[in-house]
Length: 219
Image (cartoon, rainbow, N blue to C red; front, side):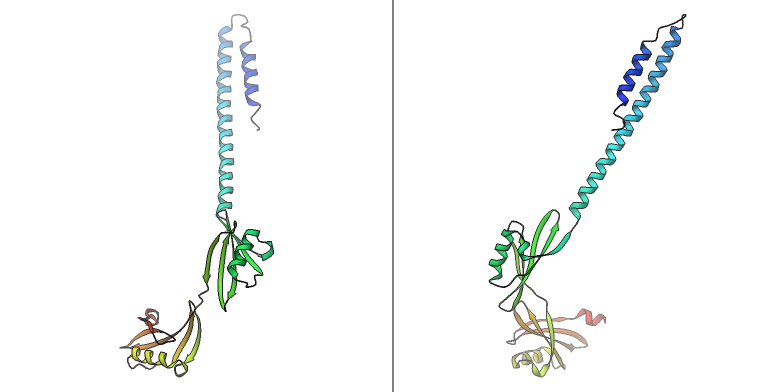
């Protein structure tokens, strides 16, 4: 913007130099002056053009950075369920199966906005994630692996039997009662041949896994 006047000034200067008459046979001097003046003006034009281009490039870079910053920025805010889009409310109500929804997490990432809430259905916690247009993206049982320590003697008889068999005679004093994917599981540690093993059994006594506990070995 600051260089917008420059072309007009250059044109006027050229016209003025070209109109100077040759006096007292000094035409050669005038031509030299015109040539020098033209070179100076040409240099000024080049400098001004480069400066303008640099300014434009800087503005373009700033714009790109600004856009890029907004694109990469992640925003998450908690809003009232009533403040969510109508399409989002409709889907969440349907998936919640009558469970109460008070608040929703609104998250914006890479220009896309999603809405997420947690509800309790049949005593289980579920996460419901919905797009801004009401499309269901995810409905998942919360798997927090809550552990409740219990005495070995208080575990179901079927659990005790399987744990004793898999422990190969190792002493088991404590058992962790887990809730995972809607099932109640029992986990115990047993020292077999000097190595610690983690054993997981269902409430019915079915062995799910028996594996070396590397973390315990490192400790």
